[in-house]
Image (cartoon, rainbow, N blue to C red; front, side, top):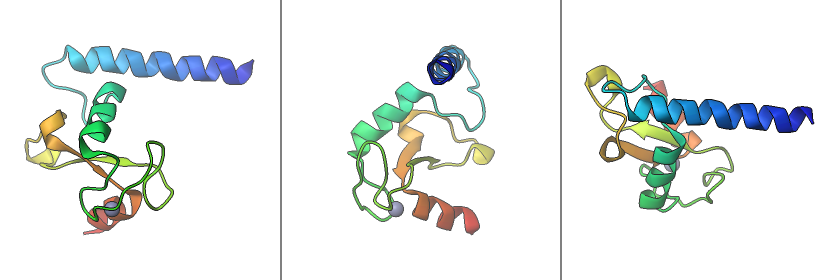
Length: 99
Ligand SMILES: [Zn+2]
């Protein structure tokens, strides 16, 4: 029961985010709405754009969760939009962040 409530709470929170970001001229910082995430995944065919290794819909080639990268960082005026997002595995994402 508790788990179910938590799941619903998550779903509702995500939906609220989706709606808020979809209608906002300046989408909230680093959050990538679930719908957009799915479209990035479909476009990139579950393949990391850095190392080109393929994973599944759930996890990347390293067995960890996928990350959605901003190609042009938000700090440099990049947007949370399909053309500026790419799928990256956790390994590449951390390597990039460490720079
Ligand atoms: Zn990678």
